[in-house]
Image (cartoon, rainbow, N blue to C red; front, side):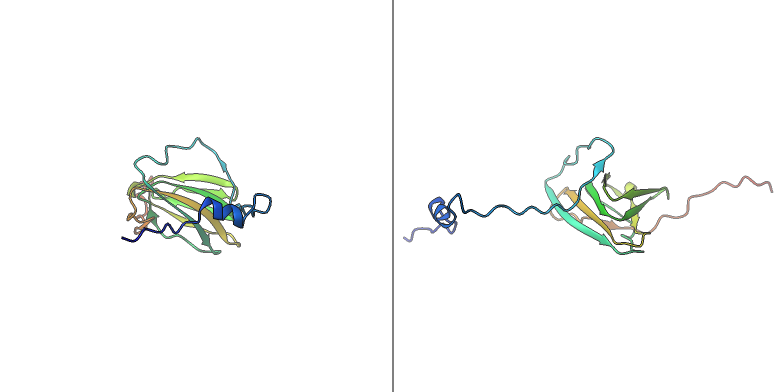
Length: 152
């Protein structure tokens, strides 16, 4: 019977290849940094999977109307995000800011870059399962019903 071979290098091999005084240092690349206005909610509630991604919207670009099955933490690294919610309220989020997006269809929204430079966001998605989509596209909301105050 053949003995199984462990493909990982042994500690002895690693020490010989990289003596402590010659070992290469780690290379760290900061992607984005921001200030969070409120305390972080429990992002990982009912979550087992995490995805990290960089999102770039060119000037005039949009994410389309969508919602997320799990929460996500976003850091705006560059540009200005115009975030519009289902009730058509908007929020402007600038570079250096962080925010948390709620999960579920009742929290549908659209992100738009109304500026003249690319909008760069770094997102950490907390997913309920590995097969759940990061976002689910939905149609735009209907105009809210407005009550007329004119007589007639």
